[in-house]
Image 1 (tube, one colour):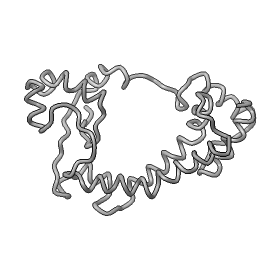
Image 2: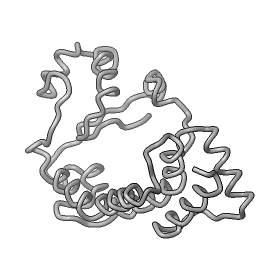
Image 3: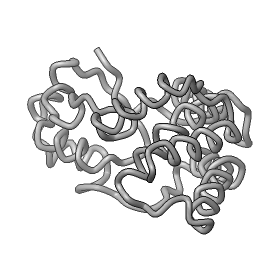
Length: 192
């Protein structure tokens, strides 16, 4: 069983769940929407979720902004042109470093609480758990959730970049500096 429930709307998955609401929950989807207090997807910030909205704002200012500026600098200096190959290379070099940064972030304390505590222990923050149990087979029925995608987004590019790493005795990056260096080296090797 997988726990489903978050305050962030994922439109494709939400539409799937709304279309299967009666089978999953045992009531018609229009009743489910009325129970949730919405008819369809909601967009924009929720005034009832100020703690998590505050956390997202802090994440943007304290963490995400750095990454956006770093990638903008690569673009402005002519090292990134938004091509498919450059996007694959960027993902290949930075995804693990960014994931490490995000992993550190979810355990850090911010005003309003630690993000994992906000999600797993909502009662501590005057909220409630809106998730529900769902069988893995139900998740597998959504085609996009079962696709195996290469970390860089393209299996051919992934294979080539793995080959280039091995052939040139390169190491996986540990931080943004080594990820940037790896990006430049692989860009040169691949003549991108």
